[in-house]
Image (cartoon, rainbow, N blue to C red; front, top):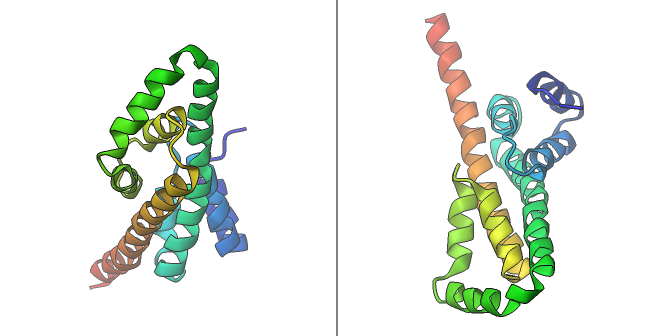
Length: 161
């Protein structure tokens, strides 16, 4: 069953912030399939508190992103004969502040699923992965919520005057 934008908006309209968490989670739960969570957060930015809205949507999205990490971890388990090479890659990655890269990818519209799969494959620390993802997603969704808060008001004012 595919959930459309109308169903997500109806869900948030009926259940408020808990539904925002679910929308954020569903937006990141699927691998490589775009979702309308950005639209939902943008639209409700004018109706709900943008900071709380972005924080809750970001938390749901960060939790949903663990699916890509788990997929990568599964790849690691399958690739037993490549474990030594993966450990070498992990050591190399740690030289370049991977938490910053994870944060940047999660705070921007860059394709994050690849980052999650990569982190799971090299067995990057799960807690560090989650915290960097959480902070990036929260910032991204707060920004989108504020864009909706100010953008929708600006459009409405422009149409009236």
